[in-house]
Image (cartoon, rainbow, N blue to C red; front, side, top):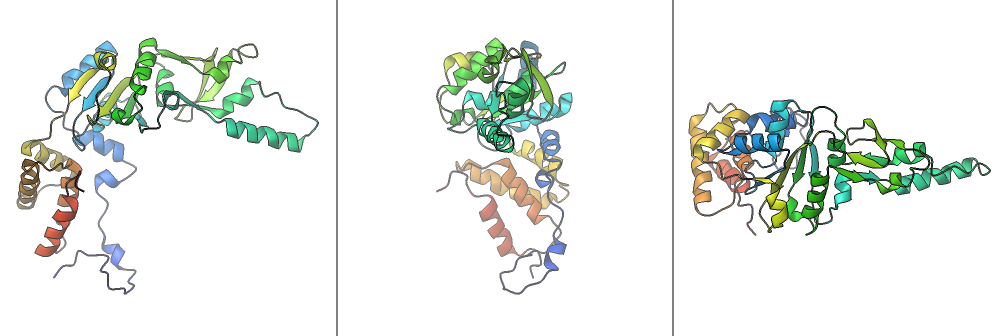
Length: 322
C-alpha cells in the first residue's frame, strides 16, 4: 500500500498530512541553492584549464551545451571556490538590451518624487539637476556592479546569450574590450558635480565620477548558450569556449552522490538505466530530472510499482517533447 502521497485527491481535509513531508532537497532550499550548485558541479575534462586561462587573460568564458549539463553551475562553482562573493546573474531574453546589464535609471520614480515635492511645497521648486537627486534613481546592473568591484573580481553570469537580440553579443564585446561605459544621465551633470553616488545591484553605494564607470578588476564572466543560433565571429574570437558534453553514467552517479545520500545503489542503478536508455533513443533530458526522480523514490516511504512508473513518466519526460 502506498503511503508516500500527501495529496490524495479524495477531497477529505487532513491538516496532518503535510507534517510527514521530508525536508526539501538541497537544490530547492533557497538559502543554500548557490552553495549546493557550486559544491555539486563536476567539471568535465578541459573546463578547469579553460577557466584558468580566462582568469589569466581576463577574457569571458562562453559555455555551450544541452540544457541541464551544468553550464550556469560553473559560475557558482568558480565563485564558491575562489571566494568571490555572490554571483551577479543577468538572465537574457529577446527583449534584453545592453543598458539593462550596465545600469537602470528609474526616470518614472524620479518624476513621481519631484511631483510629490511640488505638491508639498508649491513655492519651492526642486533642482532636478542636483546629483544627490538623480543618483538615488540609478542602480548598476550586473556588469556595472562587477566593473566597480575593487581589489577582487566578481563573477558575472550572462545566461542564455543565444536568446538575445542579434546585436547584443557585439555590444557586450565593446564594453568588455573598452573596460568602461558611460551613464548619459550622469554625464550631463558634469557641470554640476563630477561625482555622484549610485547603488550597486548588491545595494552598496559607490561613487561614479564624470558619469563614467571604469573597470577596476576585470570580472570573471561566464556566458552560457544552448546553441540555438550562431554568434558573431568577432564575439567568439574574444571568448574562451567550452562545450559541456552530456554527463556519462559515472559522472551522473557522482553528481547524484554529491546531492543526495545515494546509499540505495539498486534504486540509483535502475533509474540510471532508464535515464540512459532514454538518452540513447535521442531524448533530451537534464541531470536535475534524474535528481528529482531519485529523491522521490528514496525518501523511505512505501511507493507502489505503479506510482514509481508514474513518477518516471512525469519526471523523466523529454524536454523538447510536444
